[in-house]
Length: 288
Image (cartoon, rainbow, N blue to C red; front, side, top):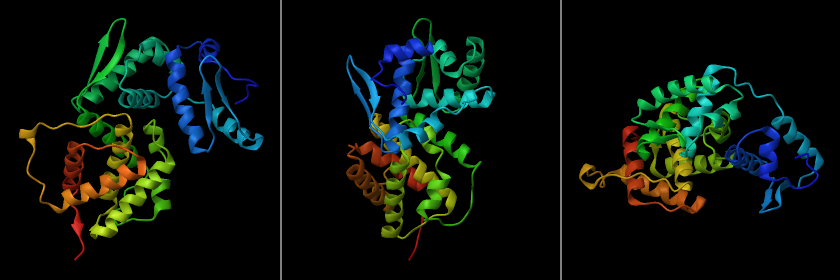
């Protein structure tokens, strides 16, 4: 933001004493943040990165980016590592985390053990190989379940009201933390998904208390995030229960058709079945 000319990834890595991969991951996060603020991060091979923005807006962004980030709290480190592992699905070295969190390798090892224990509740494992880093392994359905559980646990710190809610601004206020949990989701994305969700409620006369509304909504946000990464769920045919003549199946098709058009995504049949299970699990009531 303050550079007078484009800056290269290697120069940033040398400046901060971190790996190129760390810089690439951070650039990805910054790109989404800037996009949410209607700022384009430009890049060109062999030239570097740069932005073109008015001074007033640049100063607002700098005020945010230059705020001190405190990873001294144990739970904040563990949460950061957990979201990194679940979102990216690629290998990280202990040193990568140490560089990003400004802590020792020993501290990373301890936090990683806690994260690994939490992931095991969802049938997810960490594959640790010397020389190749740490990588999460597990089924896509379990990864989404873990993400949803983690986000919903965080949500409970903000609210739970057992009444119907459709006020978009109120929902956005309560979900502003989701963009920090999912690396490729913006507030604008959430607004669009809320619009689709509310239109579905009206179209089908669905009645949902607050907790069920958020449960379905958060799963839809995760769905968009994962499909953008081309991560799809898969079911064995003999494991599927025949639920295709239910109203929930019709609603699942309707919702995913709307999301497909809005976000230019491609869905497979198993994604419809996955959403169908989520809808049935929330026991939707319908108005007469």
